[in-house]
Image (cartoon, rainbow, N blue to C red; front, side, top):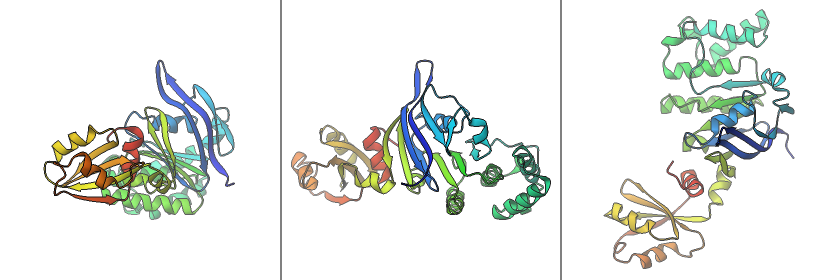
Length: 308
């Protein structure tokens, strides 16, 4: 059995009558990228804050890097990095000054700090921006600076709370390449996201909805174990067809994608294309029905009953 970076049992957090996280169990292997996928309000950020020791659980037990949290949260903070959703560095300090400040907070000596900052400026393409004020940086540049600051002390475990929400697709792709590089060096990474393509990049994944873990596994396992068959329908009158399909109890969901309707049919139905034609012969007369591979978005919709 592989070593676990994080193990949690019954992790719960209440805010008054609101249960933000409800009896969450986790077993996250070390040296992997693990994701929390869910919409706003699903409990992702609350989970991260409890796992870092910044927020006390209402119930449950959690061990991070072998340390019980929150009892040894102070010792844990030296071994983890945390990149928040919003840019949290000092906008009136330069790139280099921000990194130097974080290095001092993390206990690096003067020489260690200088060598590490030089390395990070080069690795994250920040050398030419080292004297620029952080407040003048673009979204992608801020993202690279925030990540550099989060790993200045070489943490064994890195927490990222929706780190790409304010950057363009190209910067998102480059950011994930950097995460894989970190993971290859042995850093364990936990990331929250609401982007399906990012979730598919994770080694392991938990789908959260209203504070409850609805599914857990690798993206491939979740897609293969969906329990539905996905059929795409190419025809006219898609809005009316969607309404009629959703009236069928065996249809889990129907979503329009351009000129096609993506339909999730209960997996117990054999030959779902023929079954659909029998249910709505007039609507589907002359329509093109094609069985396709499930996607992670299909898993999300099926498990949560919500649009992504």
